[in-house]
Image (cartoon, rainbow, N blue to C red):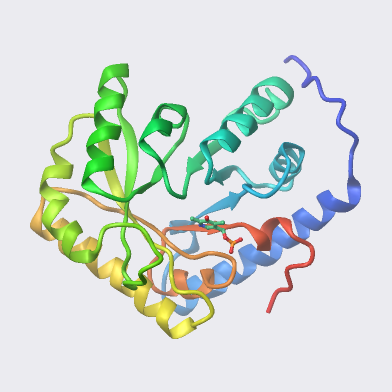
Length: 250
Ligand SMILES: *Cc1c(COP(=O)(O)O)cnc(C)c1O
């Protein structure tokens, strides 16, 4: 097997931090799952690498992280270029997801490169993504971003818009809607819990009304992933808690 062509200095201290932190996160995730009578293996974890350098992604890989997420297409491209150039074959099989607002003129930078596109936030964007994918002969797995909490600052389908659009989104030829994604209000655990349970209930409702299968619930971030797991999350998106030594576990 070819050796990875790496000349990145080993940073023992940071890799050790990443590995210890990951172990603590997994322990908390397992405890939250068991409080809810769930199997922790139902919950996937994404390391949100948007604020760190590509080298930190490699270190996180070595610490056990296998799936990453980026919110800006340009940064996604930079990380993928690094993985291709520097870290393969060590990071073969690494998955990157796209989270965060996607402008139509950036769609081509993302489709076909990500495992899941989490941020399909309108019927218009869904149609545009599908037509770009169709032109390339690919099918992209997507999530519908839903603004469950109704905060004005947040993008996404309102629950009613999602209800109205679900059938026609399911019929788009080149996207496959795999589930729903939401962001909870910050700093309010009760409001977060309502947003996560609302997301779960909406997914089950949409499944009942349409032929869609929506197994993926992308919700929960550093501050609220345990609540999200208790409320049915199947994919948590963790940034600061993974990478930032200054982020204190509460
Ligand atoms: C940045 C970001 C995250 C991770 O946030 P943390 O609070 O750092 O865990 C998750 N989801 C989205 C959409 C983000 O933009």
